[in-house]
Amino acid sequence: MSNLYTLLQAHFPKDASKPCLILPDRRVWSYRDIERASGRIANLIEALGLVPGDRIAVQVEKTPEALVLYLACLRAGMVFLPMNPAYQRHELAYFLADAKPGLFVCRPQMRALADQLALAAGVAHVLDLDDDGRGSLIDAAAGQRDAYVDVARNGGDLACILYTSGTTGRSKGAMLSHRNLAANARVLSATWRFRPDDVLLHMLPIFHVHGLFVASHCVLMSGSAMFFEPKFDVGRALQLLPQATVFMGVPTYYVRLLAEPGFKRDTSAGIRLFVSGSAPLSLETFEEFKVRAGHTILERYGMTEGGMFTSNPYDGERRGGSVGHPLPGTEVRIVDEQGGLINDRRVGQIEVRGDNVFIGYWRMPEKTAEEFTPDGWFRTGDLGSRDADGYIRIVGRSKDLIITGGLNVYPKEIEELIDAMPGVVESAVIGLPDPDYGEAVTAVVIRRQDAQGDLPSEAGIIAQLKGTLANFKVPKRVVFATELPRNAMGKVQKNLLRQQYPGT
Ligand code: AMP
Image (tube, rainbow, N blue to C red; front, side, top):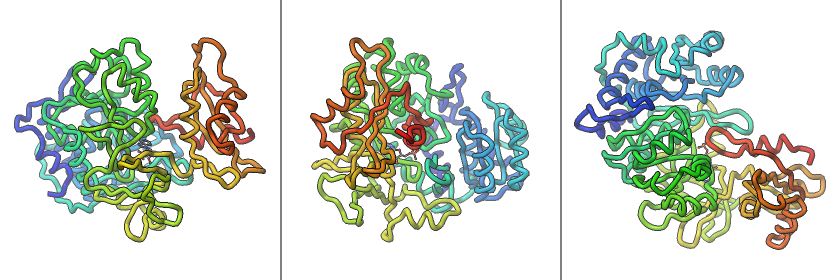
């Protein structure tokens, strides 16, 4: 029974009338509804003539039907390929041509373009699904039987392809197997103590590892329920948190909650666990949340290419600024540029190994070979260090490392100091080409609009840093902006900043 759906289903509640999804209008999808609707779509997929291993590309909004479509793909042995609804012609054309899916499910407003791109890429079928969960996919599935026998899978068989956001070069399709996803689903639901009476507030998108796998699998693996909201909305969060027991978010969600005067201790009195990840949670947010909500956020770390790698402990100290320890079944090591193991607190490259680590990039054997060491460790591209007692800290992506005058500068160290200055909301430190230094340390700073007194100036920030940091780390320039460019998961897009300020 290596089909991931079969594993999840084994944990569904005995009483199938129990709620799985609770929608904004309070309609409920029971576990029976999930089982039947995914059965109908799995039957439809087979009726279309698709065979196990075929890809199904999906670009739709977050609805119960979209989640059910994912489960149907697992059941029928298809390879689910979710795409951010923000993608336009250029990206879609690339993904369709690269993945060659047998079916493309799109939003009705994209239908004309989808038909055209599908024809060009040789995709045999296009169906649509709208933002209310209606469309030709559902109409066609309505005539199918509810019952479906899940296709047997080997652990190594492909379950999903998730294209990485690809900030440099071509976007890569990370291939995740049933075994990869099952390993993480098991470990996370156990480590974070999911139980049948939990209610997760699910506000994350489901085209990404965080919302699709981490959040949804924890619920399905424990037969619990989730408020299934189309997106993060702080007002809705304030309404629903008092009825939930677990919340998972990217750091931006926590920042927005704290910005709400209505967010009080009472709001989260019934929550047993707040989880943060996908981007670094600032120490300031972590500490403020403790005071305001009375909760210590559990920060974890992972990526598309393997789900979650580390987590702060459920019991025991959750350390601000740290992503905790390797999860059971995942090995994490930190190495220097020559591949030598780092056993002290120095910063190095993070490498991981385990059943959850992906099997390679779709149709990119050379890229895959480059990203794995000969002894089978995946090079995450993240830089990190380990505290004396084993807690891991992420310093940033290695491609964001600044090398100035031959010396390494880790942006996070400088960002933390600038962020703590009065009148500063946040900052991003980048390296810009410089004839003397190779790269010049540059800080992009967002100042508080409502700041009392003087706003921090370029000279002021530089002067303060000079007293604290080695000179080579002090930014040569500080520029001010109104906001930092972020992707859907709240990650600062430093590549865009480097393009935006090339001449400074
Ligand atoms: P993605 O594949 O979109 O999930 O992005 C994965 C990347 O997000 C990782 O390689 C890290 O650089 C970053 N990331 C994820 N979680 C954290 C975290 N808790 N702290 C810092 N960076 C994180």
